[in-house]
Image 1 (cartoon, rainbow, N blue to C red):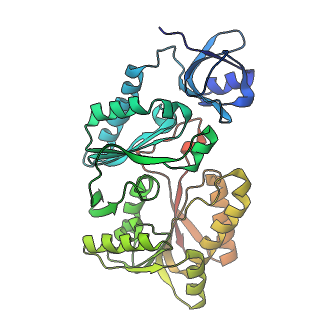
Image 2 (tube, rainbow, N blue to C red; image 1 turned 180 degrees about the horizontal axis):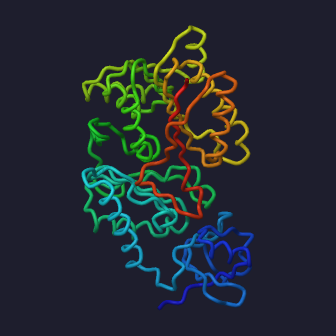
Length: 389
């Protein structure tokens, strides 16, 4: 077995590993092998030199170590192939009739820093850490071997890479993207642009919530922060009279194209959702179903207070706009605002709106985005289904 460089961790770091927490911060790394560079694999030991884990190492991030295994195994091509095979087997079990899903969800699938989304014969990858970057060619080679995709696109154009000292990167790694490209959510087909769309092209984490919205939708429906219409299309298919609100003109064009492709009728409004909710309330409008799926308002701990104010404002207005018995499907993808804080701000919004509100469901990201016990950051998406009395 190859000898890895060594990282000695503090007692606190040791306890984190033993509790199953995969992130070890720089402040808990007591000693490193000389001349160690970021992007490699290290053997993590306690102060006595006893083995604790093998981990990816970063010399830039405050998260110095990301645990790969608490077993003394060799981290090689076979290791990563096994992890990818395990991730693929889970998705085939969960979604035997679909080929659009998140294939690899970073730490939750045992490969920190790697995200892979599958859209049929096309894959998108994100390499978020130094070590994921260092293994780019290996990961692409293994994905090609396991799935034989027609195209692999990299969407590492995300700000989080700056914490690793890495620039944003976007481009085609293998093949040529097909245009137009669509994927299915239930009976609806959604168009996407792998290179220019948000995130990795689509919002797969909300797919199961999109389908749930179709089951709840009735009457007049309002979908705010619609992006390409994931919620709106499902509500329109259920027979709702749907208005989709999106600030981006290109996204509005995609919503219209998606509606036409699926022979669905809905109204698309290019507007700031905050302003529209206020204007609709002033105009005396009322709805039976409202969806709020905003972007992350809190991208750092410093933004939490402002984010909570923003979430409260839009939820307060939505509750005021709902008819008695109306349903609000409201989401937050800010992991800095946890479920308890999210539910508290919803309660505050209900109190200020003078509405009695029931919780019908507490939902999260789809099952292709598994949550790793010990790492709450993998439980980032909250989606509550509420009923206003």
